[in-house]
Image 1: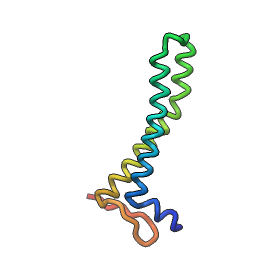
Image 2 (image 1 turned 120 degrees about the vertical axis):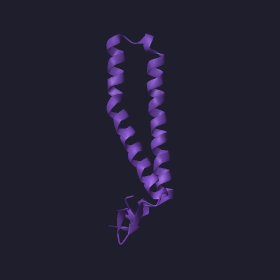
Image 3 (image 1 turned 45 degrees about the horizontal axis):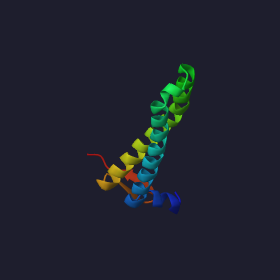
Image 4 (image 1 turned 90 degrees about the vertical axis):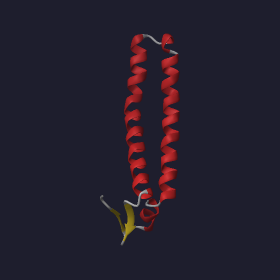
Length: 92
Protein backbone atom coordinates (compact mmCIF):
# COMPACT_ATOMS: atom_id res chain seq x y z
CA UNK A 1 0.00 0.00 0.00
CA UNK A 2 1.39 3.40 -0.93
CA UNK A 3 1.83 6.41 1.31
CA UNK A 4 -1.14 7.95 -0.49
CA UNK A 5 -3.38 5.25 0.95
CA UNK A 6 -2.04 5.89 4.44
CA UNK A 7 -3.13 9.49 4.02
CA UNK A 8 -6.70 8.34 3.35
CA UNK A 9 -7.03 6.82 6.81
CA UNK A 10 -6.91 9.87 9.02
CA UNK A 11 -9.75 11.81 10.58
CA UNK A 12 -8.96 15.10 8.85
CA UNK A 13 -9.11 13.49 5.42
CA UNK A 14 -12.30 11.63 6.33
CA UNK A 15 -13.89 14.93 7.37
CA UNK A 16 -12.84 16.54 4.09
CA UNK A 17 -14.27 13.60 2.11
CA UNK A 18 -17.57 13.89 4.03
CA UNK A 19 -17.73 17.61 3.28
CA UNK A 20 -17.22 16.95 -0.43
CA UNK A 21 -20.05 14.39 -0.42
CA UNK A 22 -22.34 16.77 1.46
CA UNK A 23 -21.57 19.52 -1.07
CA UNK A 24 -22.39 17.17 -3.96
CA UNK A 25 -25.61 16.14 -2.17
CA UNK A 26 -26.65 19.79 -1.75
CA UNK A 27 -26.05 20.53 -5.43
CA UNK A 28 -28.11 17.52 -6.46
CA UNK A 29 -30.90 18.33 -4.01
CA UNK A 30 -31.06 21.87 -5.40
CA UNK A 31 -31.55 20.39 -8.87
CA UNK A 32 -34.27 18.06 -7.57
CA UNK A 33 -35.96 20.87 -5.67
CA UNK A 34 -36.00 23.06 -8.78
CA UNK A 35 -37.64 20.29 -10.80
CA UNK A 36 -40.21 19.67 -8.06
CA UNK A 37 -40.99 23.37 -7.59
CA UNK A 38 -41.33 23.91 -11.35
CA UNK A 39 -43.27 20.70 -12.01
CA UNK A 40 -46.14 22.58 -13.63
CA UNK A 41 -43.78 23.66 -16.42
CA UNK A 42 -43.11 20.02 -17.31
CA UNK A 43 -45.30 17.59 -19.18
CA UNK A 44 -45.79 14.40 -17.14
CA UNK A 45 -43.36 12.56 -19.42
CA UNK A 46 -40.70 15.28 -19.16
CA UNK A 47 -41.07 15.45 -15.38
CA UNK A 48 -40.67 11.69 -15.10
CA UNK A 49 -37.66 11.71 -17.45
CA UNK A 50 -36.00 14.54 -15.51
CA UNK A 51 -36.40 12.79 -12.18
CA UNK A 52 -35.40 9.36 -13.52
CA UNK A 53 -32.32 10.89 -15.13
CA UNK A 54 -31.11 11.99 -11.67
CA UNK A 55 -31.77 8.65 -9.92
CA UNK A 56 -28.42 6.96 -10.69
CA UNK A 57 -26.51 10.02 -9.52
CA UNK A 58 -28.79 10.28 -6.49
CA UNK A 59 -28.03 6.68 -5.49
CA UNK A 60 -24.29 7.06 -6.17
CA UNK A 61 -23.96 10.20 -4.07
CA UNK A 62 -26.03 8.72 -1.23
CA UNK A 63 -23.92 5.54 -1.18
CA UNK A 64 -20.66 7.50 -1.31
CA UNK A 65 -21.77 9.73 1.55
CA UNK A 66 -22.84 6.75 3.67
CA UNK A 67 -19.51 5.00 3.07
CA UNK A 68 -17.45 8.07 3.92
CA UNK A 69 -19.52 8.82 7.01
CA UNK A 70 -19.00 5.24 8.20
CA UNK A 71 -15.24 5.57 7.72
CA UNK A 72 -15.23 8.83 9.66
CA UNK A 73 -17.25 7.26 12.48
CA UNK A 74 -14.86 4.30 12.65
CA UNK A 75 -11.81 6.59 12.69
CA UNK A 76 -13.35 8.92 15.29
CA UNK A 77 -14.27 5.99 17.55
CA UNK A 78 -10.90 4.30 17.17
CA UNK A 79 -12.46 1.35 15.36
CA UNK A 80 -10.23 1.76 12.29
CA UNK A 81 -6.55 2.57 12.29
CA UNK A 82 -3.66 2.22 9.90
CA UNK A 83 -1.17 -0.45 10.99
CA UNK A 84 1.70 -2.06 9.11
CA UNK A 85 0.76 -0.70 5.71
CA UNK A 86 -2.94 -1.53 5.78
CA UNK A 87 -6.14 -0.40 7.51
CA UNK A 88 -7.43 -2.46 10.40
CA UNK A 89 -10.94 -2.46 11.77
CA UNK A 90 -11.50 -3.24 15.41
CA UNK A 91 -14.80 -4.84 16.32
CA UNK A 92 -16.72 -4.38 19.55
